[in-house]
Image (cartoon, rainbow, N blue to C red):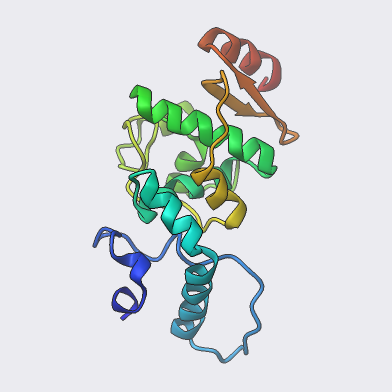
Length: 191
């Protein structure tokens, strides 16, 4: 019933569920509220938050809402600060343009379901369309329900000379221009 109700679903692939479209926000609900009603309320909120301006920007970039929501979901899980999100967005879109795998750790965490930010080397070999280490391009679908900050970052990426980034255990994002710089940062911050 959701697909016919909301126009933003028109470009969503048939296999994709509601992940990415259930807008994270504060809602007033009764404990007895049926799950379907909760979902509708969250989808209605998404419909409002993904404003006409954001829809126009999506079209002007020759992208679909679904592509923007997938990218926003990656950004949502990779960074907290808006400035980091904009830079990460620029890096990820640049990597897509260059045909470089996105290599987003959050997709592997999504796949394994482990409650950790640590990714194992074995995780990079998982055969899944969500594995951005194994397969180029965007994953099959969103890996989270992004908020407005991540959606805006996906639509308005910040250009930079960077091609790599990593998160320290304290949550600081380290940006690198080259693989060599990135490897030095990994040795320094991830040991």
